Amino acid sequence: MIGAAREANAIATIAFRDILRFLRDPARLIGTLVLPVIFIGILGGSFQANAGKQLGYDYLLFTFTGIFAQTLFQSTASGLISLIEDRENDFSQEIFISPISRYSIIFGKILGESLVALTQAVGVIGFGIIVHVPFTPERLLGLIVVGIIACLLGGAFGLLLISSFGSQRAANQILPFLIFPQFFLGGVFSPIQKLPIYLDILSRISPLRYAVDLTRDIFYIGHPDYDKVVLHGPGAGPLFNLIIIGAMFTTFLVIGTTLFVRSEKNR
Amino acid sequence: MQQQSGTIVTRQEDKHGESAKTIQPEQGMAATPIISVEHLVKRYKRATTNAVNDISFSVATGSLFALLGPNGAGKTTTISILTTTLLPTSGTVTIAGYDVAKKPASVRENVGIIFQKPSLDLNLTAEENVRFHAALYGLYAFRPAYALMPKEYQHKVQEFATLLDIKEDLFRPVKKYSGGMKRKLEILRSLLHQPKVLFLDEPTSGLDPNSRHSLWTYLDKVRAENGTTIFLTTHYLEEAEQADQICVINKGNIVSFGTPTQIKSELVEEYLLIDAEDRAQLRAELARLKLPFTETPRFKINIEGSQIHKTLKAIETPLTAIETHLPTLEDAYLEIVGEQQ
Image (cartoon, rainbow over all chains, first blue to last red; front, side, top):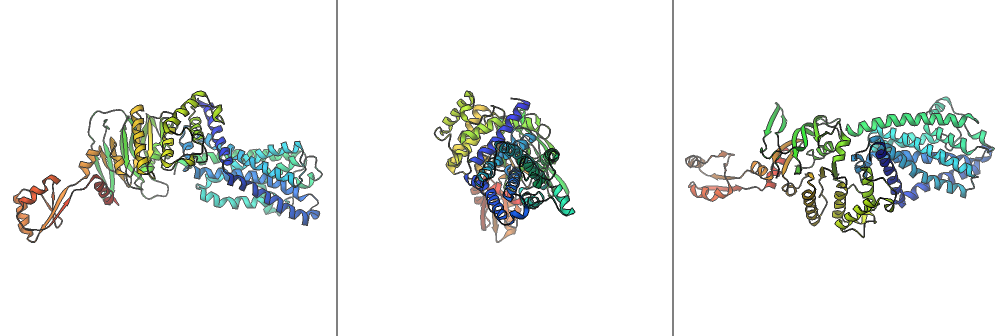
């Protein structure tokens, strides 16, 4: 096997290993499903009961779409961070000394962690069915597509973090500071149409904002609340978000991979 | 046994500047070295001293080479550079003709590595661990299940299972395996792509004596059958003693190099320590007997163990102390390492 075929084979191997490891780890499997359920069920449910009427739209649905994008984004980002620690543990040591490109390793890892995160999406959707989120086949399909996009963006974001912070410990300590504000700045469960200027600037540089808004762009098509929840109005919204996500993904990936490959060997 | 060729140069910095010590290994049946290390230096970022301090050596094809040293000597740094996961600060390393810094992928194709920490995914089966390795090295196209893999692969895995006697456990998670069994599985796996050099980074730490013994029997067989060069790092002297060449490093410097016999003759200092009330008389008598000595302040006479009795019989001055120093290779190793601390 030579060249591109070999790299593609390695990417598939690395990605499949991540999924298999996830499926063989029941504790992690349960843990990743419980958190989104708590967020949507408790937070969404309680807000809907108390403040739903003032908002003028279904808050549970709003939270559901926000958490859906946030879960996938964050899960893939955290998965990528394990890449640093992994290179000194278990089979990952083998991956780093195998004759494949470092770029393939990173891409395989982003792909694998994205697929792992997508299994969580199944859990989130399952919970959505229980709390009567109005699914249609088109909406489900749309969620899966935007879910993949949110994962890839989260993966590239995670890569940028590990390449900038060098150690998993540092990256893990920084991650909450970079993720938690994005819960609010990205409009995961709070409306962000009207923000003071300084928060608006921060919001516009938050990657999660675009993943969340894209999810709502797609999910709310044909829904009466569409205009109240999306940020950029009908028509242009999805395309605008896609362009920004594409640009962020490419920038994070190129800078992240370059820095990571360099820092990995120049210790 | 093949001899390594070339000159081993070690440099140790002292406060007056740099002093160089040159060790000439025996010239002999010079073979093309499979590993060649020249003036290798590694200084980690923000470190004030070199983790590896200008070392040079070569390893003959097919030999068993041991890099021996205490913890923190620079063994893992050296092996990391040799296996392309770390860039050297300066110096060159070639393996199977490829420069590790310029052609890392070609080097990786030619080497197999057994890491200090286990490199198996414990939740995956032995077969899955082997399959992932084979796919990463491009030996077979990856398939998500054993049954979908080519017949040739399945045949090879069955062969492995027979060899390891794990036919029944092949599809069970590796975490059920014993420590020795896991190590063997790692070695088998690393030999799948037929590497020219097999690196073993402290392979037997954490194994019981039985497992260690059986692992070495197995490695000897691998070497005899495939002509694989084995590069071993260890802090167990008895493991290094089986090597064709031993390179003792400490604090990033080579402190000794050669065959186990050479190392022993170079490092092991046998002597007799004596003392007397009348030191002047003893001094005069030793001079008369033509026995070279140094006063420490006791009288130290370099002498082989077999000559002790004869020497003592010849001395007539009443002695107040007699002490012999007949260290084993292990004592000598500990002394060298201790001196450097």
